[in-house]
Length: 488
Image (cartoon, rainbow, N blue to C red; front, side):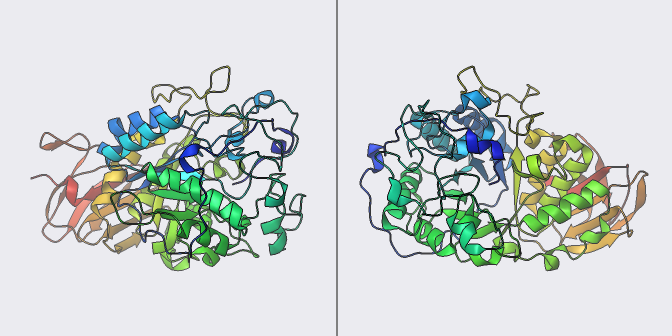
């Protein structure tokens, strides 16, 4: 998580209470590996979507489209920064572990989890366990759940002794001790090595697991020792009805001091190097350099969560975002087509100010998300992206074959005999014959349409007995064929 400096001066006061559902703390248990693999479909980050809207989208679109899991924003009680216009980052400043946020209450959250799971979509929670609220409290409270607090004093949850003694901002990111013990933009840094902090966080997370939450994105992992994360998440209960530990993936923005590999013993890790490499390639149109991508990444693909953009990069490193149109859509399509890593997409809201929160009522409560409203971007519903979710699921487990490129902005590759894609980020048409490993037949191009009533709503492509097909791919577009979209 990256927070703006404005977060330092924008905190209010409230009194957090640990909900009765998990008021009895239990001692931390030895670390154990979380679930070894995520769901088969891609993950989508429903950034700042309210619970009722997530539930509806799971049923209406995400489940039928083949998404495997939603990553929802932090559900715990947070500060309310009304004077700052209710910015997005207030949700990353906990004041208690009550499930009362601007996105809804405990009942709405539980209904969302049940509804999404019923639609075949698992729920992963963005877990904020490194810190509590920030500096600059004006004693104006309360928090989003109506409770009162002060920095380093959260009655019923944490007291002064539960925070690290380095009560200043990190000044040297080359010093690993500072990164893990000092404060990230003024946020009260928890002693995640202590029994009380660990058992309190385990109780909170297990409460979510008991409700059906099946995974966690661990916010700010770089600011905690990997053994602390392992002790907390390794002690979690099995997800009801599965016998498996929750799936865990950790946010680690690697640098010369902290490597992503330090955290793979706890679960998967977000691979920011992938974002930089692939996003820049589709932004610039230099696609040929993506040949051999998997071998050049720091993490093995089976432990990497990859993305083109997320809520942080949209604001601090906007290499490629939904505002880039076809270049963005094709970048996400590549992410879904290429076999490296677990793809994570985003469904975001529009903003002009990088600190802006989601569309809200006057009291800061988030308005229902509506994909017919331009305020909600709904990237998942863009035709190319929606079609490529099906491609990703159809080729799962198939290796990369038949790579071709022109040395510039045109590439193509297969996924054994299950699928084939071609991308054209140049200004002119790409007209040629493509060699694939696909069985002969007629396929619907899922970048331009879908199978419907025995035909294609978009382009139909005839693959010959030898696996070749001829096609003309217009500038800044692509083509994607897979076995699940083969007619007859």
